[in-house]
Image 1 (cartoon, rainbow, N blue to C red):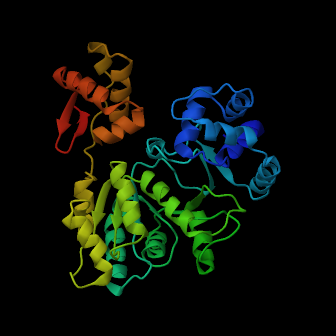
Image 2: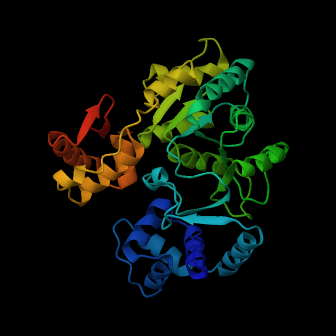
Length: 369
């Protein structure tokens, strides 16, 4: 459901206030409940929120770029962009748990942003024939599991990942480092149009924002945050793919890397990730399937009679319903889906296991008995 015009107006304004990033903006939104209330509180000197200092408050009070906000809304309406904010049910649940995830982003396409299997495939822009072959083999090997493939629509590994996903009719999402007024590089415009038919495009940037290197690095947190796992296929010792890997590790996402020869320039980044235990080594799609527990789930008979014999509280019922719908699921994903702290969830699952409702599996996975 599209948000109302006032909500959008003030959220866009908050997004553009100088000195206030996404972490601070979220604190303010949680405290005051809406962006409009944040601006009203600043106007009347009523902001007393931890870690929100005088510089931020002054920036809120002095914000006067309202005309630009109005122009952006006009652009959104003319181009039929969907705006997804942290208040919306379809905001990616994995991204909700990224501390610096955007307070809103713009979206075109038809992909499910909360698909159960979402992986990012990233790497160097200077892809070699080895890298191209590995992208093709890995994505082909995942086809039966129908994941959503996320990348950044850049040269090299990124665009190859999108192309391979389209080849096998897998939904694929491109996270842009600029607004929707262009596709960069321009040579990828045709691919971008195809992705709108099976996947989509996401950007947190306004149509007037410049194409800037820092914006491309900033978008990497969305690539990492939306994913269950990040796969690095070729990277030099430094590069944007390694930034994405670091962010993914900070979000407790799985990170996988394809190794290469020690002498290969564009394998050094992947080799270092593996050597420093920042990524698991993979050589084929089967490695990913096994590590993410993407095995074919057993067809389990429904258990409608359970509630006749076991009195479940609200939290236990939520866990039961999720497991009945999804089958086997990891502790971390369950925490994200139920918006419940891992420590609390683990205690409840232990009690449910003692009551013969659930069973634990290797790798911190659980399923119903």
